[in-house]
Length: 96
Image (cartoon, rainbow, N blue to C red; front, side, top):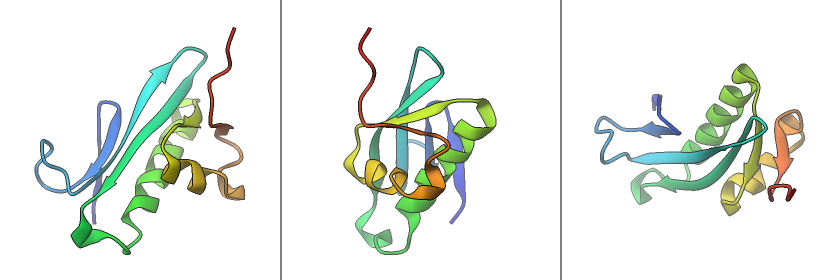
């Protein structure tokens, strides 16, 4: 399945307004992206689409010089894996 970039999200499916799967993020200060939501249509679950979405946002963060935070439990679980240690900064934003 082809993963596409749109402002503050990656998604799969032909209709951007009704994606079959998506991961969304919010931009924060200090070059941080907060991954706040993932969704996979029930018909696609178990096919690794959610992981591909996390991999896409991680690669985007690497390419653009961001660090990732995650409030989404699924994204947080995947981002804790060693292969994401270069871009994953944790689950919570630092407080000033």
